[in-house]
Image (cartoon, rainbow, N blue to C red; front, side, top):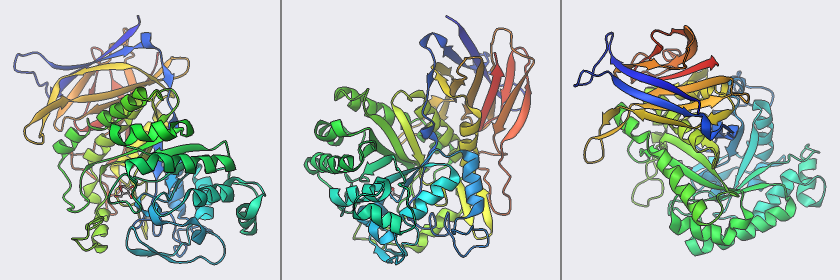
Length: 517
Ligand code: AHR
């Protein structure tokens, strides 16, 4: 068995920090070549955009801006998302979609509607045709989430007719009349969004959900058998097993969501170490969902789409409750860029590592959202700010190889605040990727420790004297980018010296090393 040991030595400050027993702190990666490599789906680097606050209007779409093109799309946003090579974008919601009627958003006479989910008026000037055109410009596949709240299976399948039928029936004729003669061939369609939640408009019971999904799927398939269908699910057997028992034969994906720093009602972002504790949680959610697929016999047929994820939940006080007035203005707190620091970056790297480690089952993940609110890209009237997580998305999307090789990570522990007591988590999280010929390795290494360097022994047998790397660390765990300091945290290309088989990883950092074996 050909095993590569990348032994990480933890060292502190300028010197080397030894553990109490004098031994150097260590973490070891054991790359399991014997288990073979496997290609992962690039849709793990996907994105979500919702009609919420300034994600669409004032974010990707701003017809009045001098920075927008002839269709009203912000050109700087298009460029930034093309740099990420975003493979797929989910739209229009999110909670928004559960009372959205797509017909108001197509054609020449757009009907402004009151958005019952978010208590604002939606002009409907950004609808299906604009979304498809925008996806084309950023080079991403469109993924449409349909209204299973107040909507019906017929309305959903009418939407598939509008997008995918060439020239039969009134909805294809409508698309053609709207100036789009060719079908859009939208491949990805979700039936509903979080219909399990009391906060969701038109929430469904467990007994209602399976049959509803089945009937909607049948009608959508009857329009276009090539579509790939998703349904709102949970890593919870009581909801998802009945769903799969009733509608499993019609589904290609089940959709799960995750936000860990709960800020919906009180915008009090957690500190770095608390966020590092949260960074080990997404994998539990993935494993639970895998177990459900195995329990129901769908592990080889239905894939997992983690199609809303972010360390921090969005801030919308009062949403979903009658006891508290919706505070629309409070949503502006999402624009405080100092919120999004190295905790967000390293959580995101660990999240993507979790998806890549489980890419036998996880085929899609959509950061929620991709623009504004808690997203990696902040858009303001004068330009954009690439927040720390933007650079993580770029490093993963552009520097990793297309295949994952299983790796066993054994790491000394970092003590972080738990819910009731301190707990320990691995200081290091890593993913190993390789080229198809397994001759090039790109390894993403997260050092969660806020203050200690990692001296990384990359025991390649006969390691090169220098290794090319890209390092994202910032000058502190709380470092962030903002309008007046947009490049305080940026990836730095470095040639790392290999001394005694070791390179050094900075504290609170993501390092991607690439080597040709
Ligand atoms: O906070 C935003 C909401 O989070 C999305 O609209 C919904 O899908 C999720 O509950």
